Image (tube, rainbow, N blue to C red):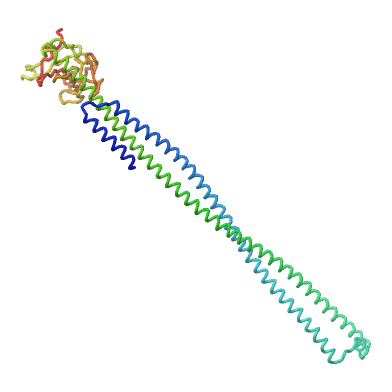
Length: 398
């Protein structure tokens, strides 16, 4: 911004200093200002290229952040699933531990019973199964005792084997679940590390995106400053062109005035062409108005003509005024130099502009009835050296 202000300040100072010189080099001024504008336009092109790259980077980084968010969400769901699975496996392992404890207790009870029976037999003296049978009071009792001993022994052996087999199965299942639990915990830990890494990456991308957007904002602001600088320089060029046009116009008027000075003013009488075709319906000076029964002073002449008839400039000059005057309608005033002016009123369809150079015979407007109460006509005046002159004395005699 400061750089731009310096350039504009230098340009303004240069324009001011040049304006103070007796003879300005308008072309050099314009070249200097145009060079400055072209330089700024080139800088704007470079800034636009950088801004386009920044937009691409912003889109790319935003997409990366979106992908990271999706990956983080996916891993988070996986971690939650692993936590749920871990909890389920822990519960299952606890249940298996309870089962193992129960079965071990049952096995211990059987072992204790067997131990007690062995101890009792030892203390009482071992009685063979055959003696127990022979000591029976009847053969039926002997049969029952034999079968009972066999059943008891078979049941105890079967229960022992079943419990031991079940304990092996439960322990295997417990070991399998503990292995799955360890794998789940390890995977969860790995995913948590991955989650931490992704979040750090996201923070990094967020900082990158923030920097890109700050750079974009700075580039956009700088481009706006450059564009504003170009407008100011264009405004300076416009003023230089206006000054140049004004100088050239003043120079032409000066030359015209010099030409006029070479003649006596009175010699121009009767040499000017008529501004339009028609007849004079109101002459210059004091006129008696029979309708109003009063004397009026006409500062020019009124020429009645066909509506739309061309109105021509009577002498080369510069248009100083195009305006609407009450009672005269649309009016054009042309400066011919040396204090010499011509005035054209009640005209329509203007063909010239203020500050435009016109030559003798140029069509500057068309006959109309603007501001007139008597239909289409031209009110024509000639001013010379601060006085209203009789136009018919200056126009070619018909």
